[in-house]
Image (cartoon, rainbow, N blue to C red; front, side, top):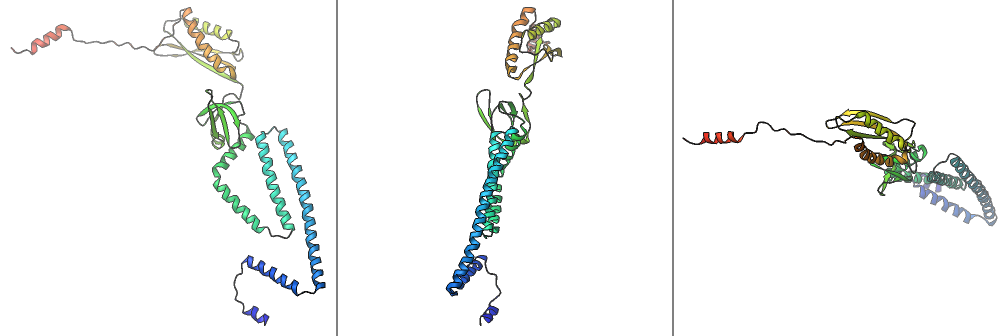
Length: 319
């Protein structure tokens, strides 16, 4: 009769949850129909299997936890030896610990006999959804990792990037913080910073200053060169090597332009630049040198005289 009912049962797909419930129900009915001796023997066998799995799971947990801690200390030593940025160091180690603990828990669940296929599917779908939702944020994170690894600039450098400039105050995983000379704080996402041009002004430690001074036509050019050279030699902040350069750069409309180039420390750039402008303005006049300014001469020709006006008026009068 039972065999006939099984043959007569329609061929339909049974959901996985129903199959599990049926197995548990059938197992429970089997235990109820057993004698006490068979029941005790079955329970002892199941307990032994379960206890063996529990012992194996505990051992795997202890060994896995020790391995995770050992790997964390190893990575920390490697990163400190390579002088990796502290924020990137902590982030990578935290990510490593999270991934390692997930794998360890999946292994333990598998040892206990629980299928991990559904867990992996949920994790994969959740990871995909989070990745799509945080695509821009992940781009900034990837840019921050590249900046911290490749180090195109460091904290304290003066940079020009993304249409902004200032001193690097902080380099975070998702953004870079700049402090402008007028004490403004600018936060730039790292995604654009890692994929665009960054002008690191202070990376080399030295900078070249360039001035353009003008003297009037007819002034003594050689005297202007001597005055400029004395001003450069008198400033101890200007390097003697490489040597400074003074040259006539252009014969402009209103002035003879002289270009001056000198090398200084990056931190002395603006101080030397402004001081030299002031010294030239005060010194040129003492040596007969004038700093010209743009001027325009207008010559008017062909204006009618008073007699021409009267003549035209008389000719226009009626007879």
